[in-house]
Length: 455
Image (tube, rainbow, N blue to C red):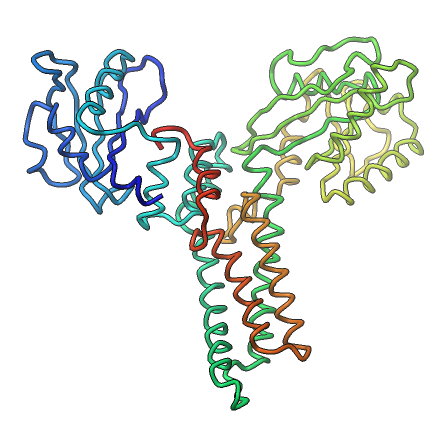
């Protein structure tokens, strides 16, 4: 990886297509010399960092464009290298010609994520922060933006740094014991080590549990709208989306496959899934739709069960709720029971566990939205607690926890110090994989290949 840092790379940092401006980014040891060779204005090699300069880009005697050049001199830049950003007019012809000129002067096209890769390799970001950059670019709601910002600014990294420092101390003490093995001395107090491991596992357990929230915030909260045929599921989906997304018909069983769409409620993105009505049917296609309904229920974060009180007996409703509660509890999801058509069929008795709405008349939809937000439980996001949203981090934390369990077993059983030290090193290894103190080229390629070119 480090061999590529001898090159100067170039890429378009703004989206492709015609726009008011395009921003072309250069990074590397020759970035300033390369732009200086085609820029007509001030001598950029004599200018201070973090300055803007107006001039023209020329190809021989021909003016390509009037531009604004931003200078960021190493190490005061995103990549910790010399960085130049050229703001030009957004014509694809102009952008292509400027990039070709810069390549002719010695730059090469950047690979996906290579600017952020260089920031990581040069110590500007750790690996978890670099991954958060991609999440920040992809964020499409207030909550996902807030989560990515928390991780990019080092919230998760700082938590892991404390864990690693404490473990490293004990690892060094046990290594010291190995140097004096013939004298049978103990430098690492086993009771203190046990307390430390217990504390670390408590922190790691909280981080692992936070993944459920982090994952749904990052990817959108999956909400299954379930119920019998013709209770108004498709009408509710259309009402929430404010558009005719799902087909609405008086004929039972119209929805035969899942229909999905997204909306953002108070900064949180929800993925609503309208499903086939739950009932016994001889129709093979409809039966397949019912089967998919139950698959979606098992993978959802929230199950919104909608029923028509005029067509549902109390005993029948209680049985359905009981069955759905068993499924949602098993999958650690939330069940919301909603009575539809309250404008013409209000509930006879008040039931605090049931929310009454009218999808057709859009009554009480605000209360339904509040119930959905409450089910997500954003209090943790708004607190100082660290939340993880990356599956790679989750797996590394689980492996760390397993290694720490082996350390505890070693403390409580006649395990020699060399095996104890090995398990502690294993825990340190997995924590190091998260922040990038332990990496492989394959891991870095896999992570940064998912970035957009120019970032």
